Image (cartoon, rainbow, N blue to C red; front, side):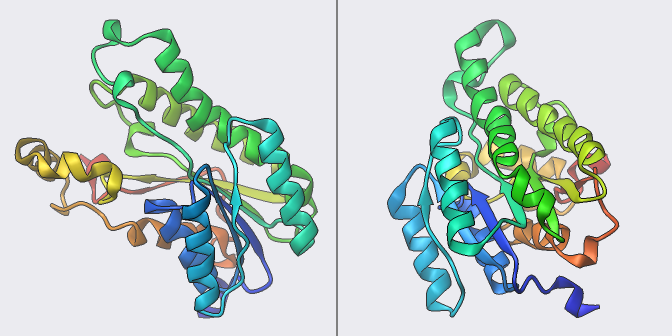
Length: 255
């Protein structure tokens, strides 16, 4: 059964792959044997991830791109196919939750809503459909969308983010139906994870404690604890799993 987790010979594109959860996913996919293309807007970050993979005898190619730019996305897909001959795995991790999209519904502008939807939802659709030909031709095609507990339940004052992640879970299910049996499409819904993006939140004792009180495991996750489920869903160990959203949330949605 251990062999079922082996990703040797497969090629993975990871968006938002320069830091945090995306970086952990890129490193773990590479450790499982995949050739990995970490992509993000910041060139230095994805270069560093690719170098870290290669320093551990893995195979990687850094690619900087904005998922909201169709031409940049197409260029990454074309480069990956030219370098490795195809794409087997797409991990849509790029996403954000900016300050101007936080607050009561009447406080949030339509522009803020659209900006979040463009990155978190439309960006995932853009990348996945750009890679569609490779995925459908692969014998091991797999898409993993990084959603959130906010894609399964409501979160106060995070309306654009919650809408985008609910949409991503819905997209996962509908795409799984259209692309079966050739490509499996699944999602992972993390709870609160210790990354650069949550440093301020963790530093606020009151907010941090409110999250811990709501989380049965009573702690934030590490990025690696989200990468593990992604490797599982990308591998043959999950060969009969599609259209699912795996909550890696410390029990948040069990309440």
